[in-house]
Length: 187
Image 1: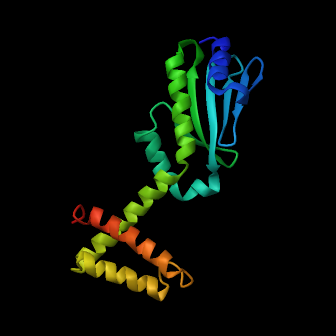
Image 2: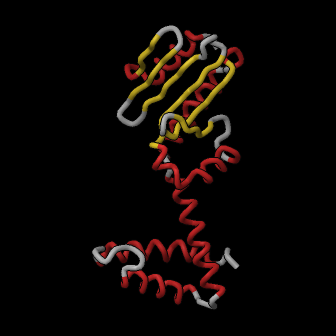
Image 3: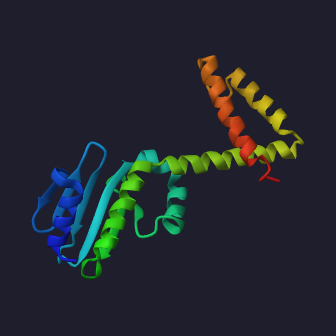
């Protein structure tokens, strides 16, 4: 891919949000994201970068993030630098195609849009599975487990005593849905 192709493609896709620092850097900045496009010093490698969240926000999910790099992210990766979790794509410029360039941009924008939500959801599901396993080991039914969780919320062990009745009911309804969904999967 030639550097002019990079400029042309970014202009077509992002229009006036594109800023260029010839000959080796581009930036797309919108209210939703900032995408950096950089060439290596010898201009043989292209790197796309998008900041996702501060590192301290991502820290509780580092093991899930590393697993995602191994299993899910395909041609893009999560990386830490300057106390920020980034989405990164690196590729040899000479063999880079427009199709691969576009796919990488789309995947990075998807990573930014998802943020750390997938990792939070995975962690929550793991914890729900642990609750189910413990409940089943004690011989509790799904209904008994829900009563226990309701009791924990009423006593302030889970949630907050300051939560309104509606907030508490919404949280318990979410627990109910997740427990019902996962109950038969755990033995």
